[in-house]
Image (cartoon, rainbow, N blue to C red):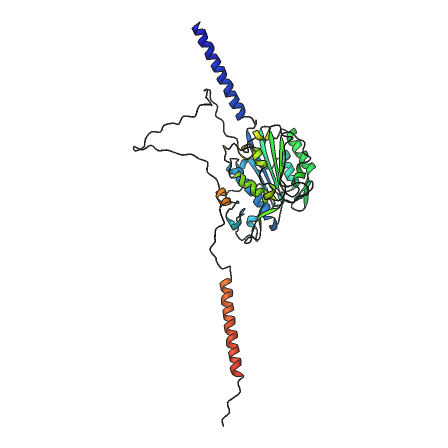
Length: 390
């Protein structure tokens, strides 16, 4: 009888433990996705649109820092500001004043550049309708377990976004493209972010499920620029993306920050425009959606047959002493770029250096004054009347 009672208690304990593990596992895999992708698009050309390239590259660096590899990022830049002849610092693109932060870096992989950035190519990337000869780096190879981040920046209006000042994509075309993606099982969940004037008009026609959208401005509002730099001669970023980048720099791969926190980025007091968002098509509660579900990458999962108690703290493995001393290794997340320090620090006082040609111009001015003075003296001496001898 005692054995039967003990067996019943033991069975009840095992059942409760298994249910507890299932609950933790369900919470861990609540998003249902197994991979992450990002499509980042700058639609503007010409030097005065420098900030749009910097916007896109800033988001690109953030998603790479949080774990999305270049193989899962489709980067489209309509102009190459790093090699523009008006760039005083070639091979660089800065997103912060005083040229403190170069977001171009040494490992930027641009998939579509220049005149390749068109409405047709953008829609073909989303829907997968690309020629067979298209290389893998230019394809969005997502599936029904993919979470996709789509970021657009450029010039727009009520219901359209311009591509290179020569063509435009409408909100209806964009909504139909997302519906094709859903019908073709090309995404699990999709986050759409747009930084442009009247950006909220671009998500008004969306009708596909599992889609969340954010915009930098409402219909009838302009999306304003930020961070003017006198040395470069243009604004370096747009306000919404600048504060979005500042928000993302506090996120790490294990962060528990959710989408409701993202909705509070750049209030009207900072953006001047009114950011908007749409969540009625999204099936999950935004409060339960982690930022890293879209801006990060899914961790690798190791399958084991052992039962792991998720409630007990993880035991630290003792290390053997080396040379009589116990070596301790501290692991932490390292920022790819020191962006958080740069954003919050005060501008540095730079040493003054004369501009190019200043010394030569100064010597020219000195010589000019010298010869003018000498010529005046000779003229004055020659104009005196001759002395008379009495």
